[in-house]
Length: 421
Image (cartoon, rainbow, N blue to C red; front, side):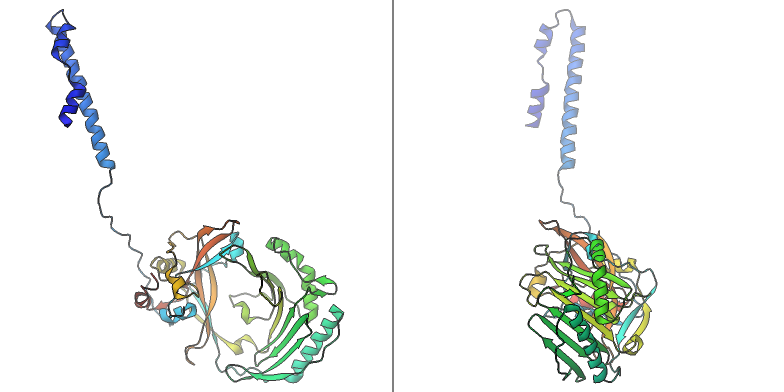
């Protein structure tokens, strides 16, 4: 069929050539030679087209899979992958690949700089820390001072109260006071290591005429500037002073991108990477979740009664490099967030090869035994943009890789293949 088609394209009957050339044979041969050349050109062009098409058509060729980089060598592991997974465990003991976070801009992810040191610290909570004996006189003195300041700043009456004892989960005695007048709830607490005050207004709170509020539509810089007079009122209320004010968290729901909560921290900044919850601090939490109950504002003041070294053992340990953390990331040796098994199985697979951001943060690992107390360990956190909501809020997959040496990655994730693909 191909031959017939070619002949139909290139065949010219010699009779027509003779009729067109009555002057002799020599010109006729030239014309025949020209026709032959013309036929050959057509054939060459057609073959070129066929060859090109055959090259462009898909072929059933198996491309070898790209192998992930080799897992870094672990020299002195302090925890196993299974122990690390317990931080993020689901109901069935596994861990998801990532959790979703939402932010309209990079700055609202509050990324921490990644240290380049070869070592870091973990913080072990001392199980048998003696702390300070409970001191009801000191406790009531703190309460009386606060209530006097509060009554003066809010133009209200000083309420009566009763100190009650309770026991924590370790059977340690604690002191507590709870006061409520329908518009505000006050809570005071003292343990061996901590003393705290909680202020929960159910209506707008004014201190010396200054309303404790923020505009969540403003930028972080505008909010911090707006908070300057509020900061002075809070310091006067709690009889404290801190040198640092910062926005600690701003979480947007990944289902609609709306603002959920916004926290403001006041504390004393110092060198080192000590987790913030080991420090004295004031925390303002503004709640924007609908039907959350309990009012939109929470104010807490935390004061430790013992030095950090009496509560926590700081241990220097080898820190793996960012490059080694990336090797673990690309092998899928990552830890995600709390989620149910059904939700975990329904997670879309995310390729973190070209991740967008990396950060560094501490996470608490709960005690396994007296030999393994509660500890705070550092992680590299990787972010990969996976979606943009209609209101412009960006959704990121966030996953965790330990910044310290951990053993048993292959064994643990081999067991988790069905739950953690």
